[in-house]
Length: 442
Image (cartoon, rainbow, N blue to C red; front, side):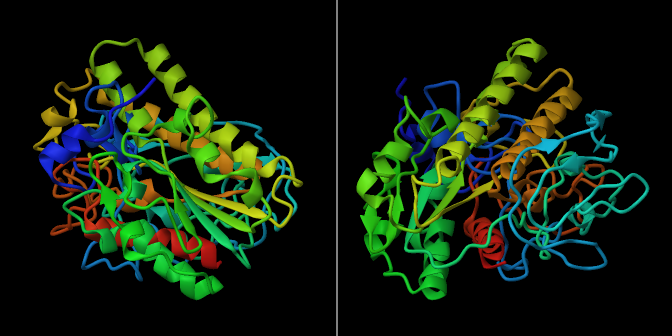
């Protein structure tokens, strides 16, 4: 069913992940939604964050001037003392011996690591009880690591990049074509400028890395009427992302994959980049706040994550479909509440449809965590890669100055979400570009 493309965002005229129902903000807690493209529907848009499925659930990752794209956000991309493994791609599905769900107390969440086994073809990574997990690096940078959001990624046995900015399941080389799918976070939104959008910055990097023909200046701009790139295809780059998009826009009845992958392009060695899921989570968060039963909310989140899974399988299951190779890198979903699930944290939350709190915020955090854990399961199952957008944006949202927030990083942290609540600022886009670059390079 059609979703209007970004009317609210256009009215707000502010484009990064702030707090409204904007289109593309991924969220860890239901604060960012896609205000611009889905104001008239259940979902909102933003690529990044936690427990809502619209555009900008509560936790979105982004970059700041002080935390530049090269250094990355304080929480994620560190190599410190953590034991990380960077190796080749994993294939097959993981057999989890035990999964522990996050325990929440309303403001903090914690999970217990469990031993897992998986069938992989690259280097083995094991999360053994009593030993440091390979995702412990994600807790660096937080003032109170014991209080920080902890997602049980180790149950899926992922290979984490040495940079700790994402997984390392693919050896991405010799790219001939780059396709951007997704929501408003990928398209880009005002007030950030076209050259500041993460897809524009990443395109410049990829031109240098792979000797690609660069896109023109119009490709880097957003069309505020239709909520898409001003020019769909330029040079070796294509964008089929759209404000307000949700995971059901990848494959039919949506049309992003069909639009960007005509059969005569299958022979190109292709890199696919996407942020998607923020609008799904935003809609889910709003539903829960309005009284939808928790079991139904969780089922809707699971269905949205499964649509990402189906899309990843569409790319990788048939080796003859892309005979020269295809690679997929996607972001998990951020949120703007810094792990608190306080949907009212963003001053413009009401404009984005977040006009009432969850009765039990811990339940919303649990939904957001489960949603993002399933994104990791997709990466491991399909041998594709995921960047840690949620973890890097957490602590740079609208509760960044609250020492009791799970993602508190200390005083004077920059907010990487714009006034829409769910879209990244220019600094946030820089961080997202850096996360994708690190995963692609390694």
